[in-house]
Length: 201
Image (cartoon, rainbow, N blue to C red; front, top):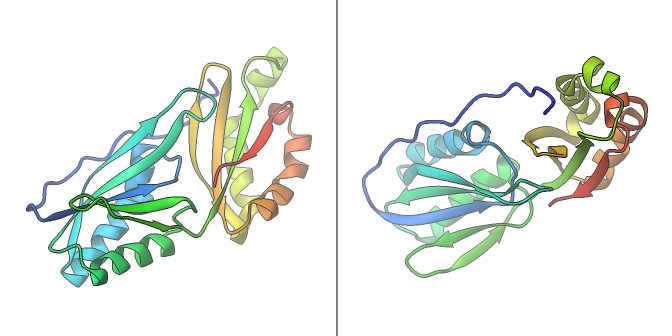
């Protein structure tokens, strides 16, 4: 709708079978971003510790407005013991996993909640603004400004383009602080007119 510039999915590798754990991340991110933000760094940590690796992943789509519900990481480990589960949770929290995430141990069905960040979604109106606004404004400028304004408070992490709205997803320690940092820009930039904000984690 607005000409977002992002790449495609990351190719998954195959690892030897072991115990399987699913990390269900309450994160609305595209496949390539899922790999950059979570899969690759988690695999590096697990391999360094000799515990296993991420062998796959998926993104659960939904109807508008959100478009993306959550994403999964499939993790093959030698054993689903306390040390391994703790290492996975620690690393994903370090990587900014949103609140509402959970580990699922496939063999037992055990579910362990984790996550540290809160989430903010800005839904840009894609149909009701003047034609000149869509012609002259750039959603990539909006994303750049989000990252600049959030600074240490958070960062843009994903998007969804729907038929009537484009959603921009940001994550950080505090929804309220991120909202306060973005509101002056949202009130001033024409493309953000009639945008709405929701907490998503």
